[in-house]
View (cartoon, helix red, strand yellow):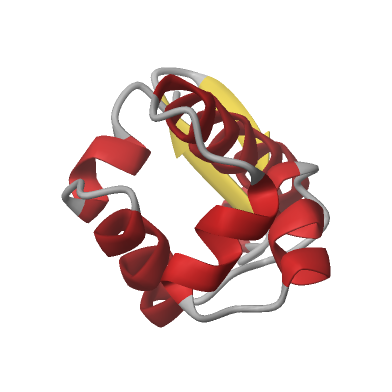
Length: 88
């Protein structure tokens, strides 16, 4: 059943829900932000997105677009692929 559902992603015999993927990406963004010693407000400003939106991304509450992921990566001076590494 889950094979036909777009809300599931199968890799290495584990099923990830979209919420789990969002949480993992948010956690990675937060980790990279803290590594760069940036506040959420500062990173949001650099990425040209609202601070409250950044907060909800880091909590995994948002299903962000590729464009937003790109803006965040550029604000962190990273490639988008760095934010997606080890998300499994």
